[in-house]
Length: 83
Image (cartoon, rainbow, N blue to C red):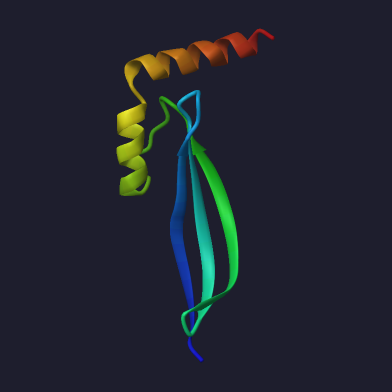
């Protein structure tokens, strides 16, 4: 009966405003069977520093966080500040 803790990024999503949502799963595995799991989510917004993210997240951010997406995101944030 061997228990193992695994931490993996199991979901990466890009939403309409360019934010990248990252879900990390922490699993407890016993003899190859997952007996417990929990999740943590965080968001990488356009113009955020993503240099410490997983390589897959960095690649997705590099592809999606274009100058146009960053400018649109910042404009939307500024508009929301005035509401």
